[in-house]
Length: 264
Picture 1 (spheres, rainbow, N blue to C red):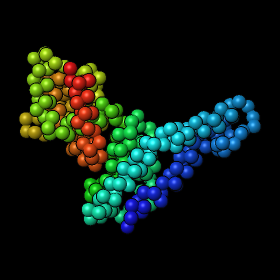
Picture 2: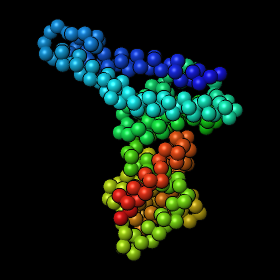
Picture 3: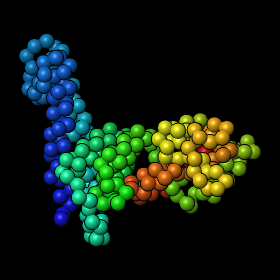
Picture 4: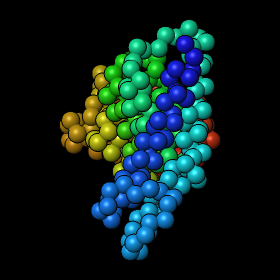
């Protein structure tokens, strides 16, 4: 089997479906069904505006932001090829399953605020073809949706916690925060709380080394600078970092910048 069995052949279909949704959106705005994008619509200004809004949407998806979709496709294709060369066997999935995952990948890639999220989702798609822990399409889509909802700061937090070489820095910061000489950026505290309570991608380590959801931790489990050394990836968080190959995308320079901007 070749890379094309899992990626390029279904890509045009996915693009056509997005275009179809844009057509329906434009038509729904004026209540006349699916108007044809790119064709002048005779009628009130609202109809013209609706059609133009659809054209703008398509332009955003496959024009200015097309590069992000291309990054995701390119990354996925390369990693699929690499893993096949390494002898990994793909899952037996239907074209509908691959297409469902691909459509979500496109949405996340074009909605992302930077190229690195597009690269992460491309890696995740490639992992979904091979990874034994990702046999079910619903699980794959859940991880892609998680990635879609994360801010760049939250992605950096995950990469930071996934980097064992940063653990001493993490501990030293927490000690200084306990003494009142350093503190977390309040927006970073908020991002940490959401990662734990909402996404369940991080938690607080207990005395036995288990990682617990902050919501279930005695005393409320608030994440602050003084207990930052206890913050760790949950099982799902570690899996997301692994399947997105996060440390190959988020660089040391990115993490240095994260530390400078958030660990005051």
